[in-house]
Length: 315
Ligand code: B12
Ligand code: SF4
Ligand code: SF4
Image 1: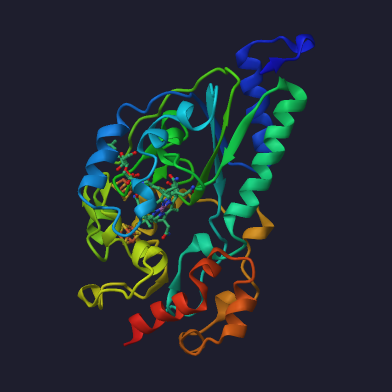
Image 2 (image 1 turned 90 degrees about the vertical axis):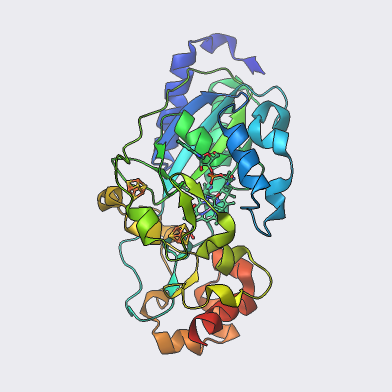
């Protein structure tokens, strides 16, 4: 990393430059941490894996060391720049009896949208600051997204294990740039869950097994998105009509009363999606699937995965 001599400036100036550009690119907020070993998370991740809370998500067992230490993931890395991108929609599905789709999957797959923004941000850093190298991550590698965002003061990890804030709740994605530039670092915020247990009480499958601990293998999101085999009959009748993902623990969270509509046009759903009735979903064809989910994250489960989920709710 070679910093431009003409701009040999303070770390604080660079941090501010990056945060201002992140806002301009549409990110909700940006926070920065020193790239270092995540000491507090190490025993928690180990326990979570030892208790098989990853279920069939075997990728979570890989790269244990890299997942806890970005310097093992990106050579010479100095800083983790965490970013939040809001996806809270203005409208939800109209038919309240229809199988439910998680709000994050209404529009274009967030991986594409965020990757583009991250690339632009990295280019900006290289042009304005100097020869900085690094990598962009959105859910794509062994990185503990929430832990980094919390460390950088972007929110706290709630009892439902998602990152949330008092200002906008939790309906946003997390991404990061890991770069070899030293910057000014932010501090974590405080936890505002207090004595609330709304998410734990409302979880349809009792997947929040203790405050701050989600057993991934019991979560509806896991069954409807991650699980490749048949959904076990032991959880029949417990899905509260969710066919792809689940928003219950976030919907009941009092801080999500402060969610604000996103401003990313690509997150808007296909015009027909929110009007589909229960009958439309139960009779969905491959053609309709391809049309309404053209660039959506739902495409990852394929037509066969989604219809498996719809049948599971119905039968
Ligand atoms: C695996 C995974 C899942 C799994 C497992 C969920 C889980 N909680 O781990 C499944 C498929 C179930 C899932 C579901 C969902 N996911 Co997911 N998932 C991930 C992924 C790929 C890894 C998460 C991970 O590392 N888990 C491992 C365990 C050990 O971590 P953890 O549960 O977070 O545990 C931490 C806390 O429990 C905490 N902790 C433990 N004990 C204690 C005690 C105290 C006192 C404290 C303070 C903390 C604490 O420490 C642990 C380690 O950091 C991340 C992307 C990424 N690369 O980070 C997205 C991610 C977490 N998912 C995300 C989303 C949006 C969801 C869903 C909302 C999607 C949906 N609507 O269906 C649900 C929410 C379910 C829930 N309540 O967690 C977002 C969360 C955004 C946010 N605002 O936080 C992420 C960050 C993706 C992204 N890049 O935006 N997910
Ligand atoms: S996403 Fe749904 S199933 Fe998973 S922990 Fe939250 S409420 Fe429970
Ligand atoms: S519902 Fe209550 S306990 Fe759960 S994350 Fe929100 S504030 Fe915290």
